[in-house]
Image 1 (spheres, rainbow, N blue to C red):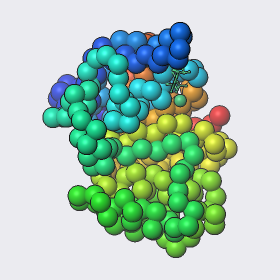
Image 2 (cartoon, rainbow, N blue to C red):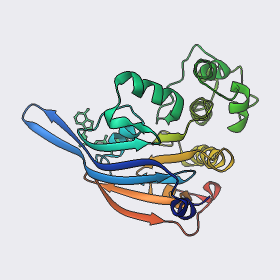
Image 3 (cartoon, helix red, strand yellow):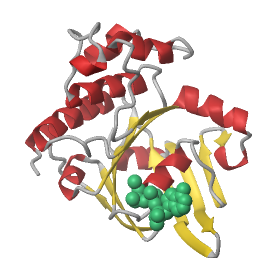
Length: 243
Ligand code: ADP
Ligand code: MG
């Protein structure tokens, strides 16, 4: 379903209101987020765009229950993240959220399959590691260790690990930031496929405006505030992106 239809159907996955985050370092205050109101809809692919320091990571970390807001509310379904205990947030992250970061954070001494198994073992209705790796096009790399994989392949293992628990939402912070553009496109194609085939609501942070062309919706962040929100009437397939 596209973002417009989802919006019409009112299937809100995340509802954030008046979200603010202030970091205090001695005398200095940094407002990383400043009154963010935002809804994310079931099944949409969102690109969160903004210059370095605009608050993108802070916003994603709060949505994913990795960090606390200093003011405002975030609801995800029946979960009120801003009123949750540490234990509730841990359970929320474990079952509802898949994270993908710029650096893949795979455990070097475990194979691709084992890196995923450590997550699926504590999940409620996971895919098998084999299914998850097939979904990212790495069904032939089950027993490879991270050092035996290219950067792009390692990132695809990290995506398989994030998605294997069938999370409500997949949050990706600069997933192609460490990759050349050709390899980055392969990673984006995988995210596009998971969004289409599994229907996982996906948020991708980038400062690369070209990547925004593949999104249903593009949300601009500037100085901790939401700027323009645009809907792409015509999405560009990831494989046609170039930067
Ligand atoms: P982005 O991901 O868009 O580059 P961030 O969310 O990382 O931006 O940071 C937003 C602002 O908050 C920046 O000014 C950054 O320096 C500041 N910031 C982020 N994390 C911390 C922290 N742990 N302590 C102090 N300031 C921080
Ligand atoms: Mg960041």
